[in-house]
Amino acid sequence: MLDESIANCKSIVDGLGSVNEAWETSINEILSKFDEISGTFFFKTMPSVPTTRTALRDSASALELKTSEDWDAFGPAIEQLIKTCQTVIEKAGMKGVTLT
Image 1 (cartoon, one colour):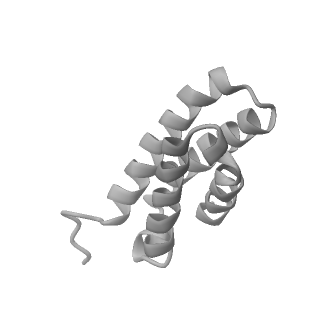
Image 2 (image 1 turned 90 degrees about the vertical axis):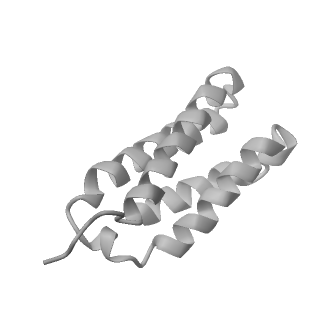
């Protein structure tokens, strides 16, 4: 699911700078972080599924809006995607989790 989210984000960011540079910068930062965390233990565990599924759903929705050039709806969708991806990144750090 993370790989699909990454692929969606790469498609979203392609040419996005001509519409809004801040969005492009945010998505590029997400892609960089996703690259860093993609091999972590978190993504081999069940707790990763809900947050990663949400990121996949939000990235697919944002990509669909970008493809249809529905920029009014795209703005809120990209903001939601950024929040969702931040949650995935935070949870992947597994702060406060003790493995037994």
